[in-house]
Image (cartoon, rainbow, N blue to C red; front, top):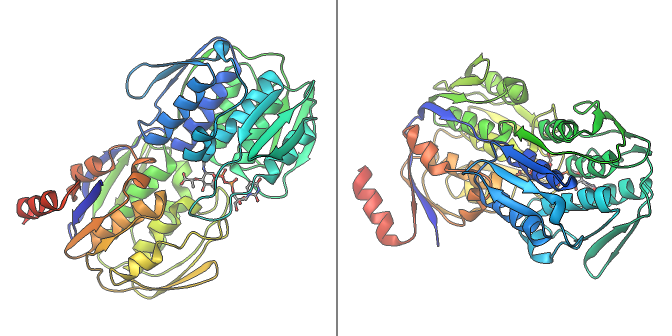
Length: 430
Ligand code: EPZ
């Protein structure tokens, strides 16, 4: 079983390049099947989730041709089924974007209900509401969501909940509906905007993405295009927090600073020095960090996907901080693992009360989910002594070359598969 072994206590110093955004790529790669001409997409991250999605797209008959590590050509013309198999959805929820893409293009789609996950309930009622508002009959039986209609008609829809997935999924279907669609209370995340920009590059007519009202004029068909994915806001934020927690000095390159404003603002509040260039952000972690309050909110608020990484940094900051998770109902599972490293955190409902400590100590810990895994690596890098992290497959599904990029910043971390490797690492670094 793969593990990371870390020797902590070393400030991260240097520069790191950020890759393409996982959550934008998942939406854009799915939307690529909506036309019959070749679509080339660049700057996709080379991570497990992307491989799984491309495999799902291949399984419905589309041609998928890798053009190197970070580019792919997709041709949707040869799709021969609108039924997505369970194996695809079981591995990644985002396969459910195929619902909106296939319903938009073929007016029919059958996708397995996405499974649960470790951060809380992942409802899909808003997706269903949107497809029904466009005129589709949607039924859920035998673990499948089936949507079908003779024609999709534009609608005026108000989302009850701000949902990234529902906003993107309904936007996909509405792009090829007859007439105009207005989506109110839409999600404004950068990956929603990237998906809209991609659809427009294929000939769609979408305005207002990035605001809470998206206006879509349905078109008859979409055409081929070439497109490059935006940088990953959460990967960038993760390295910014790693610099802060290890009291380092890191330049995070190939970013869109605007996407990182909530993170930069909070790091400044706790005492870090942040400087920005056109496509880079520098984080200089002061010796003594201060407490603050965090409340996760839809973009442009503080991202829920950065909550674990921020909590780890606050666990090492002076004073008592309060972290409130408003998006998911079970996103503090990692706190028990942090407590084994000496963190003093009390979770009450969706709030964590964090009493900062002077240091954490290394331990053997397990990873409950993707972003908590990245946060626990940050904790290991900041802690005194050695940390061994299990279940790193969760981390590697969302971060490309995570350990390698941290080593380039001076982090003493290695991917190991057995106790002998761990002992060898300890001899190398001592
Ligand atoms: C996307 O998940 C991201 N995943 C998540 O990132 C991210 O945490 C989340 O957005 C919030 O920003 C991808 O983009 C692949 P939501 P998604 O629909 O679309 C409720 C990561 O680490 N809701 O915005 O599933 C839902 O239960 C992952 O990269 C409904 O009630 O999130 C949740 O409480 C983790 N009904 C809230 O909305 C619905 O129909 C936000 O969910 C849909 C959602």
